[in-house]
Image (cartoon, rainbow, N blue to C red; front, side, top):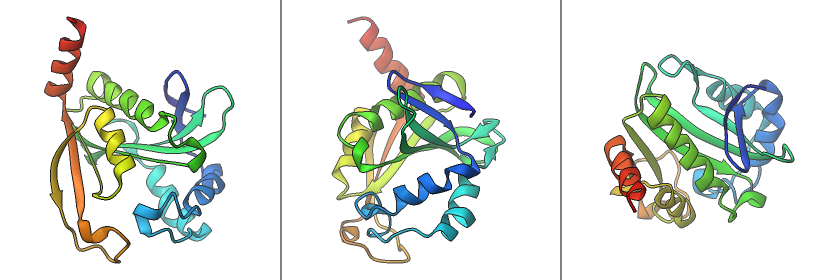
Length: 192
């Protein structure tokens, strides 16, 4: 198991083929995938053919992955995953932050804790200049995590998605945090 990052309560580690069952259970929960695909269940074939290859991909600019399995630090319980992936394979300048956690992990701060740790690592170790994140406008929980992790609202937008799901008529939102803003906030907090 290749550990990428640890926090007080989380271990973020590289995915492996053996994680297919964890990913299937996560994506089989309609509450978890409500804002992804309207809550449709996943298939083992889709996990193996599409999800795992994406999660096992190493990005040349990082020399490592862009998706991380999240486990509870003391028990090793699989909680879900975090994404911190460069938008261009050969440039770490702009990364997309994402997370998908099982329902048992909701509401206890794991998403914020993991997001903040990834942002810190990105700005201090990986050469990241801008972190971006997107979600449906109606996904208030995810938007709150973005805000608590330090990202600010940039814009609302609409896309032509392959299927309509409940709430998609309200569009999507983009949030961001730049290295300059992150450093300014850290400096301001240090002098308080």
